[in-house]
Length: 611
Image (cartoon, rainbow, N blue to C red):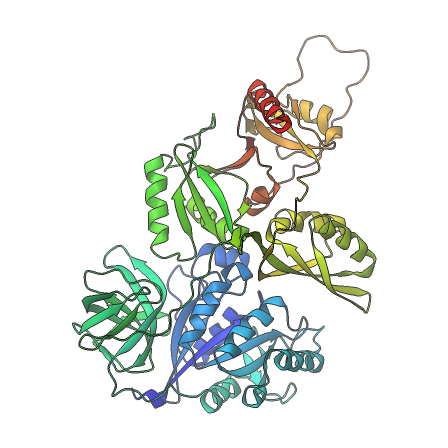
């Protein structure tokens, strides 16, 4: 296929603005929507269970469709800030972008982030105002907001002259005007063919291919996915792989794959400008590697791989219930799984921990690490993890920490409570705008202040706050931040939880367990209404006898337990606590299970602080 018949386009948007659903409709319109037996019938690019359950794109993926004799490579990018590094990489494969904006919500924090990256690469944009069939849509106001955002991010007149398509991904139509009555995707396809430029004509030059994404196969090893910037690639072609540090490795192309719909298909030759997957013989490709001519090796500018901002310690599970629910529980199992993840998850860092049988894992945020840990859990692994900690940097002799931009939209009566909470976590309000009973806040806050904040904000605003974050950069250390205000209730006996005990204890706080749950000594079974930890016996059952009391038994009404997700558990625990993760259960516990040991450790810590 001639490069003039190729279009490479990235779909970028904020979380839940409809990227993956829109790709479904494009695949259907082009006849490439293939539903496999037992597979998903919608959101085909959300390939793993967590993406489908959470409703977000976690991993960047690409597909290819044919329309009017032109091959359109579509790259679906993540929308959450924890996976923003993938956006930075994949836009280098595209010549244009579809910017999706919700017709009711308008531009959001991640919209700004992904658009900024696209405009820096000079990608020709097409704006798609999606979900125009929402009853609360405000199409024209959203378009004005999008144009204002463009004006803030670029002064290039060519990029400001963008076409606008009005669409409903769920209903499957795109229109040139919101009410023109069209009911198919033709206007969007026409806009892509007319406004997105084809790749530059460099097919006669020596080959240049850069690895942008990594996949892994147990059969052939690492698979490098990227775009051919010049020349062509063929199977068994001798190549030079230029590494990030300038080293040149001699190799050859062992296997070559093109893309057709959602399928990866073998190819003998791939032309200039196309996106393909490459397996190099006897060599593992890495992000930013450049495949070039053997006789005259050249390299393309290095692709930045996002640096981790948060870390936590992963331990072999040593609780009294260790090994009861998990299939893979030993240090060897965990080490092999971490090594496997490093082959494809380029944003993850792993190093050996200071304590025995532990590892320090680092990533882009609590969600990024939580998704990986949840994947391990579903695969049958059992382990324990500690409290997330931010990764600091020494810049010009000064300690710096990662700063996030926190966007909060909340009803105006609750705005003061939000400001009070973020202020206690070293947050600084940058923007405050009130309109129509809602207040819009933009707050610069340390990343460590985000941990555990979401739950508190939702509780303080009766669930009416809408929160989004994006990474701002590193700034000087902001000072100490207060720990969790309340204490916890800790089980003092191993056994089965009884309603009789919970009924007597529930005035002390909420519980994480319910009648019939198995608990062990040192496990956190609930919150305490005061700021201290207490030990409780939640397994004490009512003694039965053949003598009735003179008074009637008091009727027990026990409140339902508070169930936390993995990310919520990670945000909740304190420095001296762990989250025990098994395929069936999530338990929070103290690192030191014995109460006497905890008291001795606390006393030693206080003496050390006094000295």
